[in-house]
Amino acid sequence: MKLEEPKIYKNIFKINDDSRGFLFADSVREILSKVGLDEFIIKYQLISKTDLSATFRGFHYQTEPYMQNKIILLISGKIKDFVFPFNNPKKENVKSFIVEKGDALVVPKNYAHGFLTLSDNVLMQYFMDQEFDENSYKGINGYNYIKDVENIENIIISDKDRTLNKIIQ
Image (tube, rainbow, N blue to C red; front, top):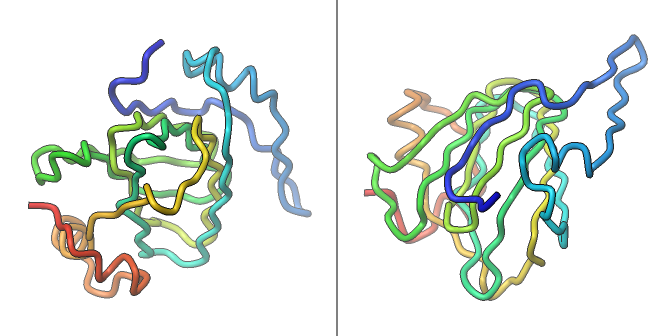
């Protein structure tokens, strides 16, 4: 399967919760099969933990020759995820998904990605088919877009993301 459009897969894996916390154990090969990407070769992984609700991270992407297809697993919490073609950052091109514990989201390499936490204690795992490259790593400022679309005044965002020069039109 060629990755062309972002797609969410609901309840794709099981988190075993109990009074001590949780355990997540699954075959990566099985997860790739469930999202139709059996030939996906993982070259880089990232784990993201966000403590507080109303935190925005994004919009990030990498340019050629290090563009990354992503498979994102939500291990705990709830987010609203936003994606759009990074070469056409317009409001009408933004797609959003509600992603909850146990869901997977696939994001093609030509899309910028960001998310807003809808709960505290969000834990995400990313699988990417390309290494991280600092010179190819780019971002688009999403502060005003998220503030307006989600009607949130006190968004938590890094200074780095808040001061990106490129914006969504």
